[in-house]
Length: 118
Image (cartoon, rainbow, N blue to C red; front, side, top):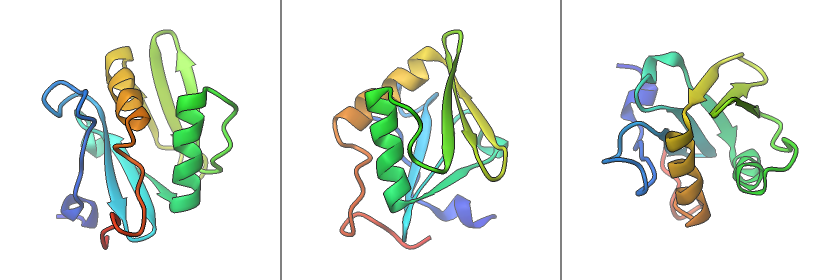
């Protein structure tokens, strides 16, 4: 087992039974994302300030200001690509919509009280 296997992964309550979505795990200093259907495709780690900016980027549809990953639309898919590792996570429209709904509801707003050790 790798260290990421021990994290408290969660998906939006808007995803279909917690499947087929952006999976998010809080860490001691931010958050990590992966694809729930393809966990071996890699992860993208965000320090807390960059995670907050990433959430703003996703909800606002503004330029990528988070410094960690680029969000790109390819047809109806959304691809999140790490600036440092090149990991690219591709989500279909339903998966990304569920993540956006959860982010809009504050499900992924991690503060010191919600962070866990990685």
